[in-house]
Length: 170
Image (cartoon, rainbow, N blue to C red; front, side):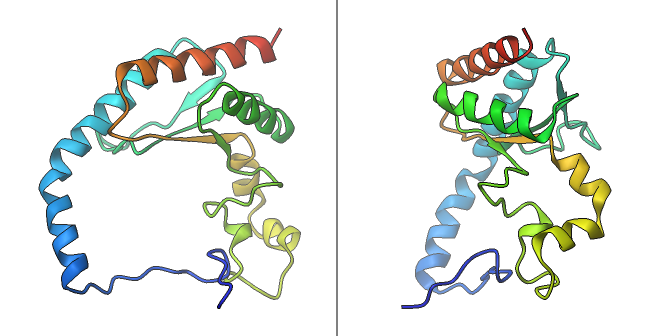
């Protein structure tokens, strides 16, 4: 059995057989409604978080250009340690939340975790290549979203984020 780490190789397979093609076709039929639901959920959450000055939401290039499969935001004024603490506290409230730069949980979105990018370099040496990017990502969190979330789930997420923000900055 091969032990393949998704951070060692850019593993993307676009090969499609008949079974995958049939599954993809059935999913494509639902795509528009799923994207609309994701966008609604995303908008609901961003509306619920707009009064928290610590939350810096992504600004879309065009109106409704963010699909909404994840709520990604920066925590203004937070250090890496505070961001990890925030993420852990939101998780303790029952909401999936990930600090992108958490040194204990390598995130595929952070280039320094890519084993295929300059594999001869250590993580710290990879980080030194783009220090501004590293600094920018140190206070970014990611909350995965799903089109199956109900309003109560969204309310729970807003409540949990607000509760953690209010308790971290007392």
